[in-house]
Amino acid sequence: MSKICEICGKSTVAGNRIQHKHSVGWRYKAPKSKRKFKPNLKNIDLELDGATVRVSSCMKCYKKLRKEE
Image: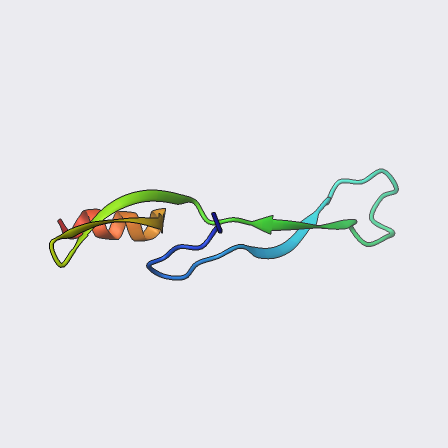
């Protein structure tokens, strides 16, 4: 299952993990390593045209849908 919200299209994005405290001191650049930011997904049941459909949704969309009810 892919990590994509089916409502808004939010997906995994890449970034850097920055280690600010390192042994050599501040003479050198802070070491960086790659990391991933993954969306917080939840499987929910939506009613579309009278039929129940199971959708993978991020929590931001889930909260908006819950507020509309």
